[in-house]
Image (cartoon, rainbow over all chains, first blue to last red; front, side):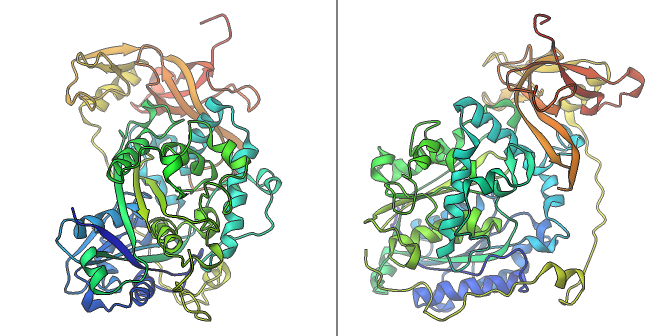
Length: 387
Length: 179
């Protein structure tokens, strides 16, 4: 397989509602990514795009609907979709375009406009549940997180305040991100613990918001990196993805086994056998605060049940030994589902190429890992990147 | 690592113009609206048809896989682990254990409610470990409900059953010492 690098990235603001259409959002993110790679659309061999359920936009086959905005015009274009996992999965799909030798330069564009579903995208989330077993109970999406969080807390005897620390860290980190929707420099653990109870143990400030936004990356082969004299390429060293059974009431929700398997797939490729020692920082997927902890354990960055302790001890702060979500994460920047690529794989690129500005991790970094998570709570995608 | 390049030149605004809820509600931001009419009628399938039929009889049924020896609940016609047909129908009990739960102040549309819904996963006795279903819990309070609690199904009276998971009203705690 050929080596693949990220050589440019772009994203729009993440906001509850944006005036721009999906197509316009894609255009803005893509133009920024091309500018940062000093390329034009004529240099691009193929486009990969990702977006979550069509029902958010209310337009079926929205991949075709917004394709022009991604430069998907008289070019090979592929849309991939693995729910929330799309954020890290579409870069993987773009990676195999280049790794296989099929293309030299590939654009990845992810878009989400959740505000079109009015008054709240929750009514669309309801359609992910099994129609026979689950839906007669009129489930709310937050239930699944509440049930998983309770199981995780109970099995490991974790205190709610240790989970709230993640929301505090990420919303504070987000202050340094120009696209952030929910940055808060002054938020405290008490604010999270006193916020509205949604579905115990999930409270309002444990949750990332619905958002509009788009993000884009430019991927290139080693040949193209050389030919273009790219200053700071960031290499894809390992990719992995895995799905568990949709029979989610048949497994112990306290540990994401599918993520551990996806991580092992990526680590094997990246020749990582001691993740905690060989990885300098991480962007675990954080739609809810406990999910960052759950995912740190699934990414094998610590033992099962140990992530809250690392967070409490400050290890995961931006200036800690293992910074997590230095971007500000979904909790601080926003959660336009597939478009969170810009704060996951995008942040790995910006950090490892030294372009993260005020968010730059102060220590020397060489290797980062990120994951995203989705479908009916059973899919995860993992990318390891090196400077 | 020293910054050599910048993600976005200084002074250049990141793209995106925010709209407020007010602009949407008052219609001062130009928009078009649409409400889809889509209705569905799902065939329940081989496994779920029998499962729903048995719910009407006040019973829970599973499928056994002779290869892995698991008793699969909810039942399915093939074992996803062995990737072969499952072998026989077996009844399981209408009692079990709370594996996890939530106390929800949100309804299906994320609207706020004051009387909470107790919901969670109950693993059923007689099925393989930790195999169960999502359902409601009743006759509990947020102080008494806990993971590991033994519970029993409270069925609707037979004439009211329709072949739905709602033929069970909820699962209630089994008093200690009466297991």
